[in-house]
Length: 374
Length: 203
Image (cartoon, rainbow over all chains, first blue to last red):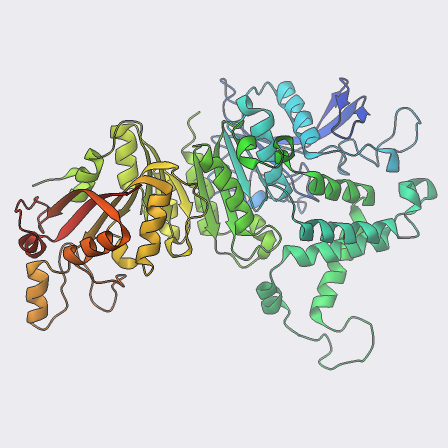
């Protein structure tokens, strides 16, 4: 895909004083959101696209920082002049969600009532809470209606949620590698990941900050497990096969197979920067996500509330949220006579395919977005 | 004779679509027919396509397009969700002939089916000359043809009869896209290169 990066970007902060009532019954009296924008909001304020992040994502979606040129945004390959999310046409907004650990208010932020860090006392946040917080950010930026709300995986679920919670404020929803709710298997994987964290002796009931430690072992295991579910069997076979680091068996429990080395490296890297409480919250937000719950499980009735046009995409090798899960959303939209297109993209990278640069995949997103009239 | 979009069957199909009708086009290609029906009939259109390049082209064409394989069923579409389900020049490429016809009339009030007639006299002549037919409506060589079912207008009508499908209208076109107007069915079978049917189910 031709096009360029957006180049140097800078994070911005917004403070919100209006309390946010949460799905769990809790209240956040005030909170901060950290966000980035790329491109220029037009005079009619009709060209804004919200990009929602997945489990471990954040506000740094594209470009790099002047003082940190190697820190490139997590979806840089799709955003920039001439790229599918063309910053010559669109104004792109990315933020770190509530409960995050990259600058927005979350468990590792100070709790104003105690003066200590929130830790385990941070209220449980749901996808719908993120959407409400994002709506307030939109208000702050002067955006009444998004040209599109878009995301992959948990990000796609936010786009779906937007379309039914604020139907008047979303003209297009782009839902990639997502599902209308998690399956028992999805929840099971999340629970094993949480158990790894919760049973880490350094977890201290979520108040590990006060003990000047962090449950890095548990978080590392959680990420290793999660990482397996993001890749496809074929891709792991191609990338690692049964390759050994030292050509022969050592008959021990050290790192022998290349795949072990890779997973441990990924786990260590992640445990080095991510917050375990945030990981717990994000996985619970995934588990609870089910907009059709308001309609006794009838997704057709739920999608009747949406007014957006949809682009839904899945990946053939994604076994975490399979193409069949995307087709559930397609069917519910078709049953309501909505405008929806669905692409099943043949890419080998499993669930992570949504982050990859592929001419056909990006071509589909590009074609869809170019047809949006501002 | 010139036809809209260069496809004589498209004009005939368009004439059967009432303003605002809901149309599902199976094997919609780049969405040319649906674009035509949306622009000229105010239809709500959805296409199904298997091919990546056509998915991209249909999205560029501002068509609702769902990627899928007709052979694997159409479970994402609800019963009687459409007024018309169109299968244009595709039936001969589908292995599960009866299955797809049943699916079409489960999803739609009416089915519109067009297909090349293998009994067209030029096709018969080609076979008599010892060659597989290649024509305007059968534009492939035997080794690169997507066609897996070889049938004639009479064969198709027998199947409709067997399945209890009602033929509401039928148009038969010659290779130039002109409507063949003879009453004798055997003669029609001989003179028609492309057949277009409007079907419904007896209820």
